Length: 77
Image (cartoon, rainbow, N blue to C red; front, side, top):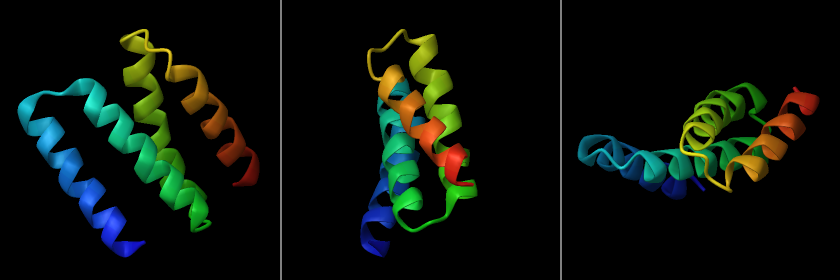
C-alpha cells in the first residue's frame, strides 16, 4: 500500500504541475480512500474535502460519490 500511496502522490504533483484539475481531484480521492482503509480518518478527510470541492466546482458526476465517501469517513472519525 505504501507504494500505491507514493505513486498517487507523484501523480498528484504531476496533475498540479500540468494543471489537470479533474485529475488532481480524482487522485486526492484515491489518496483519501487509501487513508480510510488504513484507519487514518483525519488524513482521509484532508484528501477527500478538497477533492469534493474541486469536483463540485467542475460539476462532475463524481462529486456525489466523493461526498458519500467523505460522509462515511467523517462518521468514523
